[in-house]
Image 1 (cartoon, helix red, strand yellow):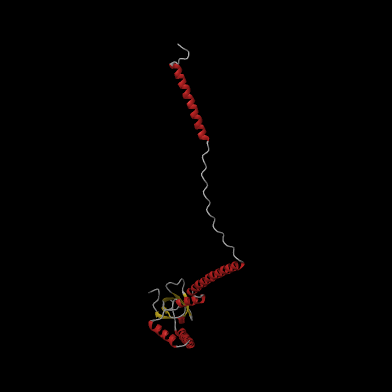
Image 2 (cartoon, helix red, strand yellow; image 1 turned 135 degrees about the vertical axis):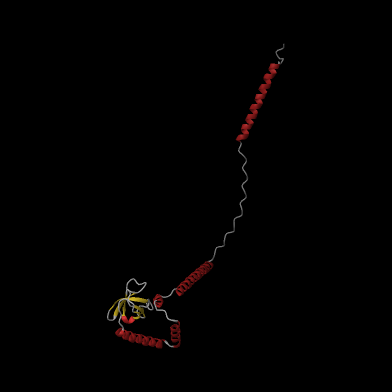
Length: 215
């Protein structure tokens, strides 16, 4: 056999060498491709900048400042006006302190009968303040005379039932029992009172002489 003649074994070795060379070449190409930097994306075009605001003149600046000051003053005046209106409405709904005392005093007045209320309304509507005051003085004097007469003539004893006709308005019209009687003073036990009332004998009028012990 000639030395130049290829055998199957030689061919197989050559094929292996070629294939290995191709693999190495392919591996080098892949490594080179992976190390290459990606191409940069193009930068976006810059948007056109907004036009610059024109610079104001001194006169325009002064006018703008004056307009702003006027607007602020108008807003402040509106706030003050609204606050004043609110305070005025609150004050109108709130009765003065001295009127509250008068209202409380009115609540303590004894109740008038329907006829007495009609007479009271007629007097206060028909006469001026001076005559109403004069009538009140005359009525007060009349009551004093009647009280003095009753005090001199009236004799009260313990256990007697009486009706309160004057004195503390809270108890006028109520019926009580005499606990103790003196010359012109007496102690009356009334339902709802914590202790016996200290009255003038003229402030009460007897309605029964039945002794409390036998009532």
